[in-house]
Length: 156
Image (cartoon, rainbow, N blue to C red; front, side):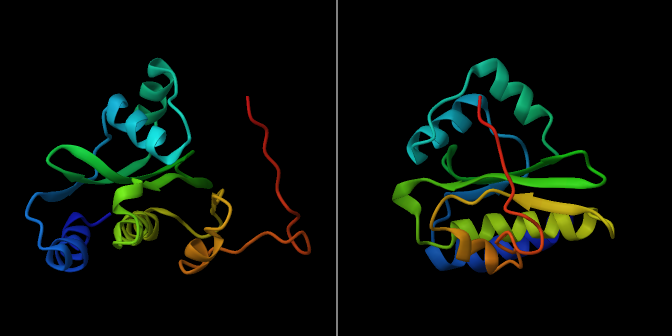
């Protein structure tokens, strides 16, 4: 990942557009409380503090947008770092949706992936219903069951 590339993207697409000098971004993990507040705003609910901490520490890449220390938008990459990468928790608080924050998060993730992923690796994600076209804009394909199967998951 090229930090300067992401900084230039942030300055050009977010900071200049919104004229808000209190906005900044970070590629560090958010705190568990920030993570849980964002999840709660999205309607995903909070997760156990110990589980959230373990999950965040073991993520491969983080990117978030903050205003005065408040996490407004976030995304991360998890996986084995070699063959399988998974885009997780791409979310923007409801009050800030529609302002390009989600695009910036995905562009940062794509920058990380383009500098990390090798030929033969797989990048996956689960989209929230109705947001599939957002991810298709970044080259992700909906699994329609014809060539690859539909995919499955199990929740605990």
